[in-house]
Length: 146
Image (cartoon, rainbow, N blue to C red; front, side, top):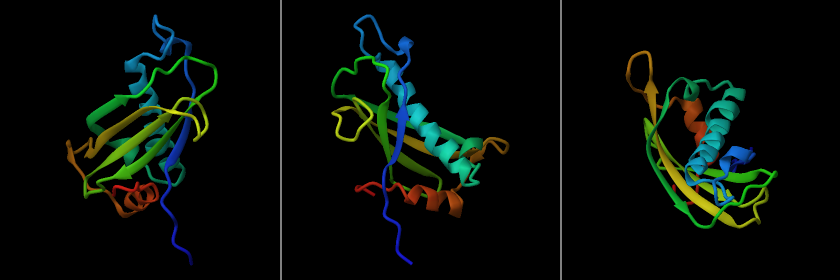
């Protein structure tokens, strides 16, 4: 059996007409929404397809940092967002985002960002630990800095 190689999770996120501002580029605050949509695709949709429902029942953003590298003009094609995982701990992890100015990996990078994520048991109102399945799922997307 061969070991699986960690790879970024890739999400193609469409731009909406309302994402642009008066300067006809995607507004800085809408960038945060775009990376949120990619995070939902990873933690809720992809994980959910594998029977992992824990992220959808309690995953909180504990920190956010965004670096805007270039303006992102609105257009009808989606942007490519690559997500890697780092700082994988018992009850938290960090997601790193690379948002490309277009749908391909060769398109220029427009934004880099990270979010610190904390697992939370909403019913018990307290932090919780990653289970083995969640940890294995995230390990498949570990970045170089992990």
